[in-house]
Image 1 (cartoon, rainbow, N blue to C red):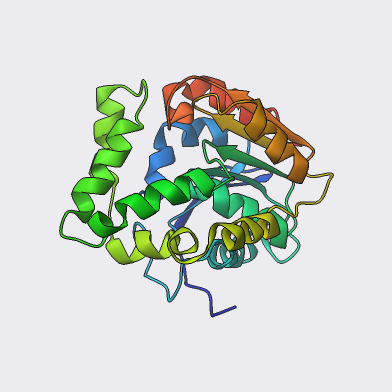
Image 2: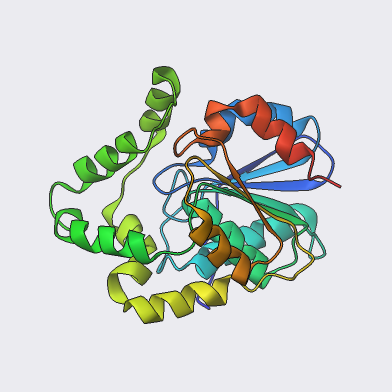
Length: 252
């Protein structure tokens, strides 16, 4: 594994360590509406992933590289024996899952990130020429506009203002889908889903992905709990009080 990247981060509150990992092109401030309430119950560590927010770029954007960066911050903040609760949104959901496959965690919350990436691979390959063109930022912003669901205008505008679309970062983060065959991609994903059986794993989706997906997920993470909040890509921001209550309920 290449060297880790020193991440920009902040810490609020006290109690069990709760790590918040944002989505692609965003930064730790995407969690602003829920952070103060969570910090009433936990020591909340928010990071800017490599190539995002105030953190420097890296030489690769594999989920395990992202996870290694986060783990280095966890050790810096809480010591080498820390066992955090990890929450990730979108790309952060993949990073949180990869983190749990590589390091001890108390639980994982995956916010609206499907892990069977075949359909997303097909879609991404269809967009690839535009992603590698001058239309890159327009494509990315249009993609997230279509995924906003019932997020209100003020909150959507706030997310858009902090969004930082960088082609190298996005294409690097999606390299597994752009460069691997469907079979090799499936094998890579399976390798990231090797969580211990006693680690609680909660998925909060903003739309129903169906029983086939839930069955696929539980075939790899048998303890997975799947909830559908019918909110679009940002259920934690559409229903912040419900989200805080749900996460706090997981804290030991």
